[in-house]
Image (cartoon, rainbow, N blue to C red):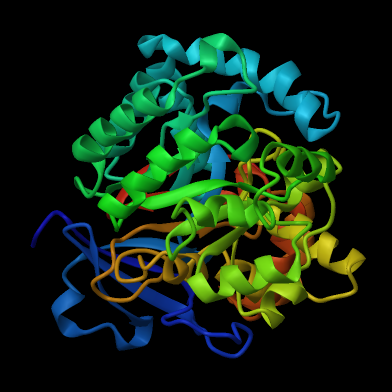
Length: 442
């Protein structure tokens, strides 16, 4: 028997294909099996139907737990790890007072390398197996992040932040260096193993027209690289963009004019959009990163999920650490639910899970390898413990029978309100455990 083959036994939940109705279109195995072989998923089903060919494999028993695809966090900032939970203020003041001073530290490669390992450990301990990440302006920090992810065989999309104005001098690049550094990083890391590159202008106010044009040239040259930036997070930011780019129709038009709006573009926040912007996002199949925790923390506003659905725009959930206050995607889902409540719309737990697994993977054209538990996909998954604390055990007791889960959506909803790092029993990437919960006594 191949030592790289395993059978995992657990309650198992995932979305095998794209759907507009996650509440109806999911696969759930109350007592299920997942077979991994050489880093990929080989089979999935009811444990009672385990094929004979797999019965000689070693069984990792997670009965009583819930196994789901690894979470995909599509918008967060690697250099902001250490400044999480810094006293809020509003976006622009927060950047000046906390973000920029912290990011200057990442010019030191050894420092960036240490923080990259800590950053990934935080993701793994919270069940996140793939992420779309902003580095700092420093090329060497982005190298360190990609190297750390490659060592773990992690599916990572990342990019060097580009900004040539309205920022401290020691965090400023220029159109030429931004383009040159980005090309070198693309050639070194894009589609190498499981890593991919994202062109990353921080946001329009910190990039000149010339820098956006330089990045737009790369977007046209490298048609499969991703693009990530911020859009319409804060009303003061939007007014500033209007002053800086008076010739453009609206905020999104600044990016579109420079060929930065397309499928594979992910725009953080999108709280205060004009109808033309909704229409353009839909037409180009771009994606919105819904960052509920950071939107609440910075008082930016309430994202309109119903409007996004009506406009047929892709939406993915994201933590936006460090303005986001937790690396935990389940807690992020809980904040998304609260924002929807305030907007008088509904967000089910299954829809929330979809927006951080298969829905995000599909929006990014990565659903052939991540976001689901389909045979052939990479074996990236997380095992959740509904009984991680005395309180959660009491809350979920009625949802389970004979050490199996009966109502996965109810369990997920409870965890979206109660979860923390203790919820993650184990996290696997390419079939290998990258995090396991230490033994606990409760």
